[in-house]
Image 1: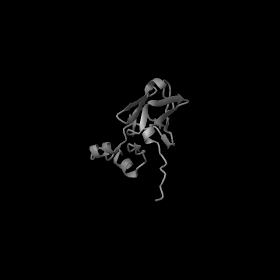
Image 2 (image 1 turned 30 degrees about the vertical axis):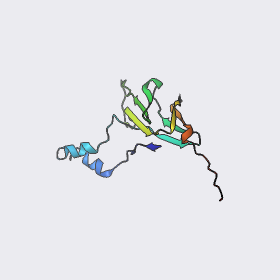
Image 3 (image 1 turned 135 degrees about the vertical axis):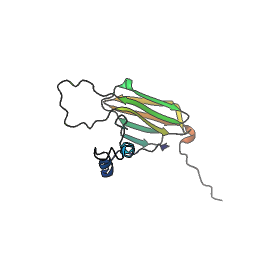
Image 4 (image 1 turned 60 degrees about the vertical axis):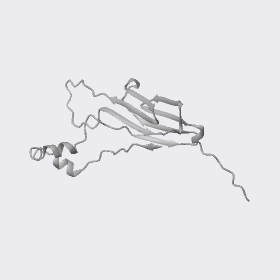
Length: 148
């Protein structure tokens, strides 16, 4: 199994300087290209490999089950969804906004070593758990060594 590369957003001092209002008229494209898209985020994941299966857990707090889609095609397991922004803002004064909203996609190349008919997904308390059974040919087998 291989994961498609994921880079967690980190605070970068250079990014903060280039995004400053003073520099943006001089470097409009540079500053914008370094800004993380506020409408895109990536849920945290745990991936566990066991003898019989792979287990993937995704933290999706505040997301309804209807807003999450799990698909498997040509060996690629994809988790896709959207966290919708709260729109009600009457008489609210925000001092800090750190939660991110928008569409997300996470993909895993499981190859042909899994049994697609035995993929199970469970969603409880904001955690999506997907269990993907390995196919018989992908399970490790012990081979006896003959002394001769």
